Image (cartoon, rainbow, N blue to C red; front, side, top):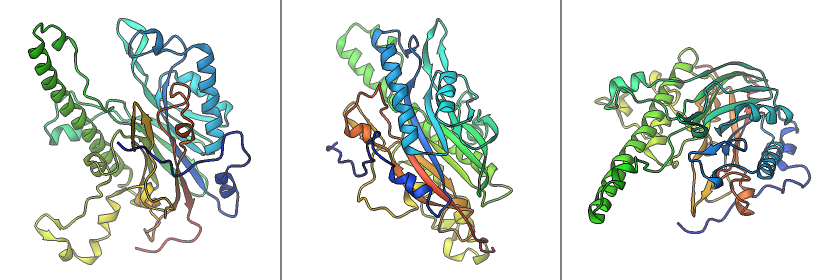
Length: 378
């Protein structure tokens, strides 16, 4: 992959007012939401996946990381923040309350090794808000996906999404999800390979096992995308213009099949055997109400290339998103609010700061302007 050139550079954390703050407190009333993957938010003494000395924080490292998170929250100035890779939930709750977020939800516990309670094997997600969280629930099952696909009956989310209903000023009750899809990387049981003594056979077996694991992780993300899409359709059943926002690390690129499953953004040429041009005019609007929208594509952009949101291990890619319902699409004449800005806070990439003290992901921030006038009638 060629070297990345960062196109948007926020002011340093120690500088004066951030340009976003000036935008927020002008004539417009806006609502800002962010997705923020924290990279192994686990207090010292908790190990990441394996009990090894380098896979936990020293006290001074932890203090530095928490300070960077607090400073970043101050700079991005979001009203609602969806977090991923949360292990020490209560510690994060304390940090965000001090940072000005009195409302916090995280309802799924991280998972630890059965024989070692200090080694976590899977993190969880959380949401912090300046506005009241009216309800919070974990999204658990794949029931409808399993019934209609080839998935195993035991399939479920790698990390269960968190769904919150938040009372947002001027926008009203807004459904906000924090999601973290199955991680990339074809991981399998090393013992399958390690027991083979002949190296040629061992290497041959390694490739086959990696292939099987690759199929599993790609299909898992696709299923997660489909299950979450069906969940949002439930949110929109009673009100197709309701504001819904998915914030998260979806572990796929913008043009991936996984993202197209979630957004249903692929072109429609026919409905069954009926060409789209022959669909009655009164029903054509439904091609928009049943879609979700990558917030990056909604406002105009100055940059020629989309900024990456993940940078580690000599890889750079776009994995983090704000996905919104049609009720927040500025092109929808009946929108409740409009996405007017999309940003990526990637200063720590440019400064090449250690990812354990910051994050290997860049927060994605979307600005929504609630509607002031009456929406157009259907």
